[in-house]
Every structure is written in C-alpha cells, then in structure tokens.
Length: 77
Image 1: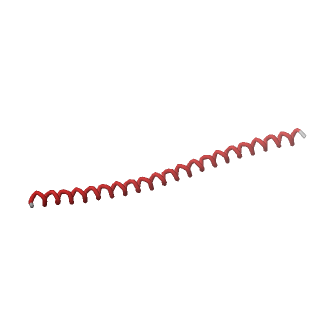
Image 2: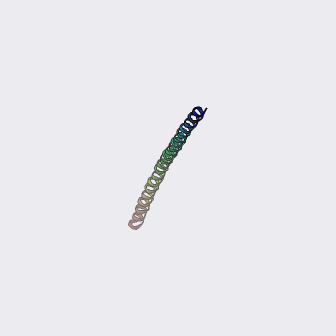
Image 3: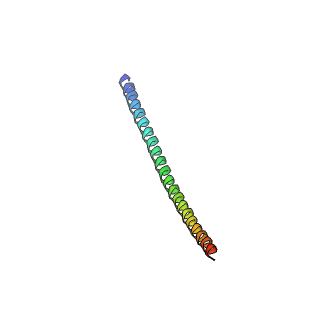
C-alpha cells in the first residue's frame, strides 16, 4: 500500500511538473503570437503613414510650382 501511494505521489508530481511546463510553453507561444501581430500591425501602419506623407509632399510640390509660375506670369505681364 505504501509503495502504491508513493508511486501515486511521484506520478502526481511528474504530471504537475509537465503541466507547469505545458502552461509556460502556451504562455510563451501566446506572447510570441501577440508580438508578431503587433509588429505586423505597426509595419502596416508605417506603410500607410509613409504613403500619406509622400502624397502630402507631392501635393505641396505641385501647389508651390503652380503658385510660383502664376506669380512669375503675373510679374512678367
């Protein structure tokens, strides 16, 4: 009887240890997935911000060029 109880205790400890490892692995995997999603989202937001910046700069250049040629034609005329 003592041997079966001690075997049960040893098996329980081993199972508990395995369960702890499993939970820690799951926790790490979830953290890695979360980090990967965050990095992907930040990269996509960065691309959108860059596109908006490029569009604004292009529009600014176009407006300045048109305004300068209008001013030049006004001064010459």
